[in-house]
Amino acid sequence: MQLKGRTALVTGASRGIGRAIALSLAQEGADVAVNYVSSEGAAKEVVERILAMGRKAMLAQADVADYPDTYRMAQEVLKQFGHLDILINNAGINSDKTFVKMDHASWRKVLAINLDGVFNCTKVFIDQMLQQGWGRVVNITSVIGQIGNFGQANYAASKAGVAAMTKSLAKELAAKGITINAVAPGFIETEMVSGIPEKVQQKLLGQIPMGRFGKADEVSRACVYLCSSDGDYITGAELSINGGLFM
Ligand code: NAP
Image (cartoon, rainbow, N blue to C red; front, top):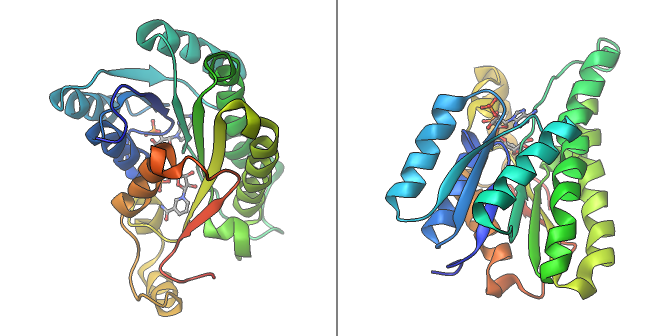
């Protein structure tokens, strides 16, 4: 068990990639706080699965786009766990429209959750990580932030912003025992991808050298690697997990 005794918070852990990350961290021995915004039942199910593994787990409801709400959640996590070692900034949404049709509200909403959310969650835990002289932060970006995409100007900008922020924080915090990395998935089998029309899915598959979408576990194992001692010398990296879609 590579993460025995560690405590972690995964944002957006009620489903999809975040859920897989929470379960993988727990499988490796970490106690996990499961963040969600509205899917309480699904988040509870993740907490129960982690408790069944013999780890500590807690619900950590908050809208990551809301700084005061995120601060409140951090206080609850620190009270229950005593400290936080691992932060996975995974919560994210998309709201796709061509730029001509994209309104300001849709731009703001995606940036508020995907980019401001990473600022908010990192900000509320960083002082405590600095105090303990150890921390692992993994930000979930996207291949779309690396290559752009038709109808995804807001989403691509948010993920490219997180990638650049990751490198800046990595430089600031490298000497303090804290690593900050990004994991950039390609197309992974989650609700986000199942919502893509079948015709578009087939077109996408044709562009992926491995000829298939990725699995959430294939992303979560990379997060475990970056947070374990195997990843101790890695900071400021953006690890692509995309079946060869972009290289
Ligand atoms: P998903 O299945 O749609 O799940 C999104 C998660 O984020 C849910 O747990 C949701 O909570 C949570 N969330 C949404 N808004 C939130 C907010 N304001 N505050 C707190 N939590 C919030 O998404 P996914 O496909 O697993 O994607 C997870 C991450 O990977 C995202 O950052 C996404 O951009 C990135 N990614 C995904 C893919 C892919 O192919 N799926 C590819 C590249 C990158 P509720 O359930 O409570 O709503």
